Image (cartoon, rainbow, N blue to C red; front, side, top):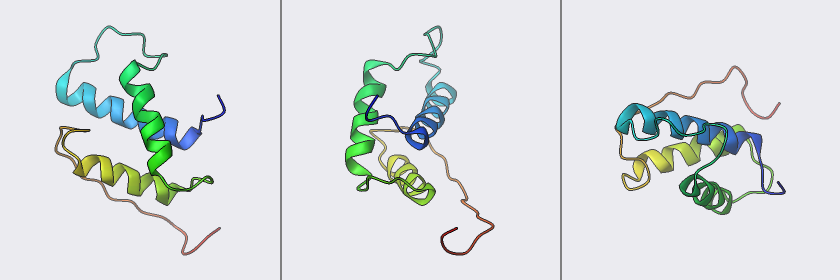
Length: 89
């Protein structure tokens, strides 16, 4: 669990939901366990996020990277990231 991060876990839940919605290919699996593909994806995210202390904006930028890469996420979507704070809190 040394490479577990709650933000990355949330990002992977979003990705799983998008894939279920788009492909309906995840039905019937144990949703509490990561698939081999998701384990590889988690490692890829952690390597490519580029920081050790992961902030919300890092996750937003990674989600945009994954949305732009049609091989990693073959779905059409967009999102709007909003915050009530300017700067670091």
